[in-house]
Amino acid sequence: MANFYKDNESLKHHLNHPMMEKIVELKERNFADADKFDYAPQNFEDAMDSYDRVLEIVGDICANIIAENAEDVDHEGPVVKNGHVEYASGTARNLDACRKAGLMGMSMPRRLGGLNFPITPYIMAADMVSRADAGFENLWGLQDCAETIYEFADEEQKKKYISRVCEGETMSMDLTEPDAGSDLQSVMLKATKKEDGSYVLNGVKRFITNGDSDIHLVLARSEEGSKDGRGLSMFIYDKRNGGVTVRRIENKMGIKGSPTCELVYKDAPCELVGSTRLGLIKYVMALMNGARLGIAAQSVGISEAAYREALAYAKDRKQFGKAIIEFPAVSEILSTMKAKLDASRALLYACSRFVDMYKIYDDIAKERPLTVEEKKEQKYYSRLADAFTPLAKGMTSEYCNQNTYDCIQIHGGSGFMKDYTCERLYRDARITSIYEGTTQLQVVAAIRHVTTGTYLNKIREFEAMEVKPENEAIKNTLVFMTQQYADAVQAVAGVNDPKYLDFMARRLVEMAGHIIMGYLLLEDAQRCDCFRKSLAVYVKYGQAEVERHASFIGNFQPDQISDYLYTEND
Image 1 (cartoon, one colour):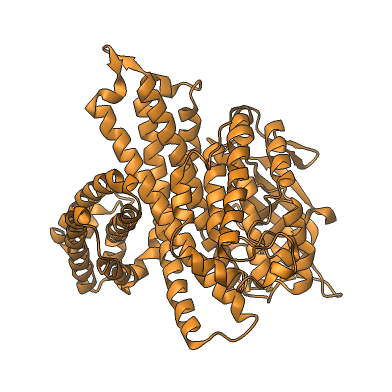
Image 2 (cartoon, one colour):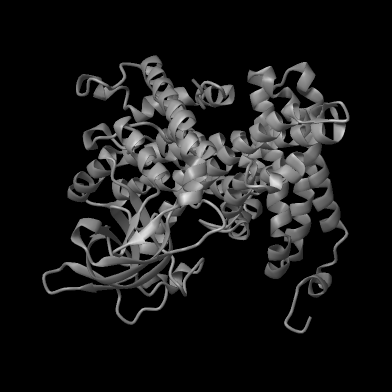
């Protein structure tokens, strides 16, 4: 039988990264749960074996259930009946399989019914689910909303809701409104406090992924008369209590198995999470970091599927008496697709490890004071996670779109037909660079890590890496690219004009991304020769892109900006 974990050695490669030993020992508190739960690991090797076994189960379900249902789900889709969502039959079967296998609440603590997995193996599961069906990932993957409840809700709420997620109930995050898309400060859904201290919600939410879920995290305006983010709070809405109806499901281009809903709240009972006024400035920011990582995983999964579809077709399709993979024009596309895929996955799991480290330290800090060294590490990894999540989401989603485009190109006219999987992958991919913050917004989040030196400092750490003789030339290329990047940053910063910085931001962030992904692939190639070809191809590709951006910045005069920006008079 097919298995999406066993047929992809790169997943096991990243699972066995050297950082995992420290992540696991911290996550398991030196394996303190071993005497409390019969399924808790006794040591590091036991924990890794547990992750390996569970990921093999995920790989089996993805290959033999979710992927098999994907085409029918895409055609059937969900529907609204009596104000609620009815999933496509294949989606219902997918959820049933995941629930029976215990794959809900994977990263939640055992005391609340979870598996207590670090973020990294959970993201690997998301990677595989997305390869099988990106639309289903939007249902299954929203279990990570439980992280927000775990981080900010009180103990009673944790026990009440997280245990239900671990048992298989679904979640959503209800943020967007008709007049509040990326600008969440404009949210107007009203939260009214009653005399007994409880709250009710009234208003409309739009573009809500899995909007008829069992448990909702809702951003709402709790402070009367407020108009900005300081008047917003976070609430939990329980579907069992009623008060919310689905007005419609959006008719989308892709991810059609995932219901994207318009919701009407009418005196819907809810519970406040944490403190008032922190809904946007603290809780949603934490929620969005997790969402960015989830979309990066979704992007990598789709890229994986696209590469495999393209490769299989290129080997099978004959033209002029030979398989089209033998033509350099086609072979080059496949090599570039594979390099972008491997670079994307390297960035995804570097990011997930940084997120693991800072989240674990945050959790430990709730139990006991951190040591001086632990506080230093917490700050270091928190900064890296903050810098790498927008970079990962932005770069992987753009490569996802490029890989599905190239997949169709290799299929030629056949790829334009709905008979082939690549057509669905192309439609599914398009949303990845839009939702949970467009690529342009990821640049806005990332640019401060260009100007403050977070990316350059991490690149300098990579430069200290000793490499095998056969990788020296590639490392030297990366060092040269880094100097081009550093010079470009200095040139832009030297103008001291925020508008000019905004104009050049995308180029600077992409330059950093290409160099970082090159170094991460170099690290992978140091551990496994199987990455050497992707390393060589990607660094050549990245070198050309860095050179292009450096040339543009070096030859651009700041007073030329008005010539490049569109105005109403154009």
